[in-house]
Length: 104
Image (cartoon, rainbow, N blue to C red; front, top):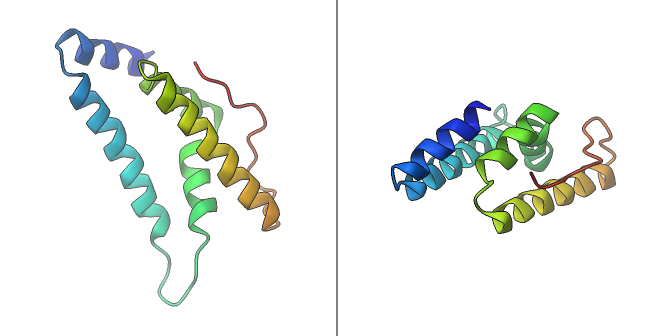
């Protein structure tokens, strides 16, 4: 609900571009965090990013709401989640699983 209120406030102010920048910055930050591993270790960036961004229903719903004005971005987000999930499964990682991606 908070995400929707904030997005609508940005839209009302004519600043959808700023809202999109904030959403992109969030995803970039999460990707940056996912790429950090203890020195000498090779991390599974895809699995870490998947877990951080898509790891629970609340986060998924928040991201889809943040992108509610852009159905193509929502579809791209779902595609990315499904792709990362498939990569994790093929690597034997069954810990995180999204089985029902849907646009808001």
